[in-house]
Image 1 (cartoon, rainbow, N blue to C red):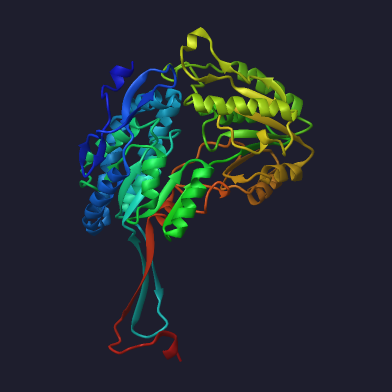
Image 2: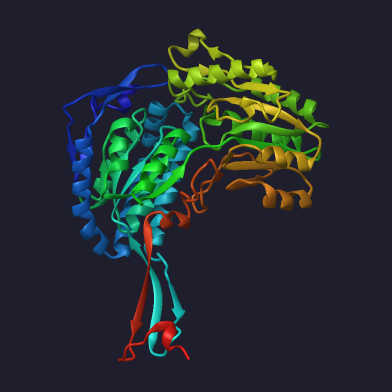
Length: 499
């Protein structure tokens, strides 16, 4: 199967519109469903980053002078090509990432949607006109491209997140240097080919494969990369923020969550169960928006537990390319070890393990990395399993006495990405929208399912205030410029000459 989908034995960097073979160290890309080697990817050097940035600088000067509606035409073509190749892209995504094929199709569709949405911004990129305070004077603000930007993307959404970052950067007139995750480089390879075919000028997008410690670090420290947009771990994000702050470089961070579904005593429990199952175990829990906590009213706790256990038993686990499977593998052994560590922590803390909690090694699953969907109950809000991001199919039930306590427990973590409440009470709905301290709030739905025309990101430890997706993404990749045109024929000194 791997050979049929991907016949390139070693990937090359994409710099200046050319595929540049790297002669140094490489690492293997493995299918997490079975451990088979798919291809090899370069572990490029810092010098490769320098080459990409120099190429991007030259290309960006001309690209910025291209009218924005013309820049947008390239994105429309990118979207069309992605649409034509959706199924193949989806299968390749599942091959390298492991997520089940229906989720892969959804992720590719997200990239298609982003292409068309951001292409539309090529005819907007709105600024403002405003009355000037003096006669015969015109005042306005416009968006200006920043220059060359760096994007660093994770393995769990290898094409969607890349489109959230690269498409607004490109339509705004910037050039891009992109470091994808080494676990999932094939989506970057395929998207670069699509950019090339769509007619993006050489050097506007550059892909440099490699490790975070070498390629990522070189990008963060490069003086000519004036923006770093990063999605990944909190520790890495904090280090990036510190270095970018030293350089007065713009940085956008999206770093994770400890997301909760609140289930009130008046909730539609069937709907709540469906939302929890999808949010907690879809993508094997490997989403920054995955449901990791269920904050449940004590009056419906036992009923909710029973129904969750019934539905968890129905989950089919295996290779994501098999249409019948609903839960795929964990990305790699390191991911497995982290999940297993938190299972033991949960037990030691006194949470009750109701289901799962173990690695799956059935003969039918081959050499893949599979972990059983796991449910803890009787957790308390101060337990580590209720505070720290696990990034796996593990959810903990936390009982509460009332709505006010539920809100307090939801907000009592260092993250603030996504939250959800199931209730029929309209008053609670509006109070929850106001009081839940997260960047995304769902009502009578799970914690996942963001749409591309709304801002994506969170509060507190989830990020630093910027947003991916939506028109707000343009703020990351543009600077505001104030323009004054004085046609009075004399020097006017702003406030000094105001009578």
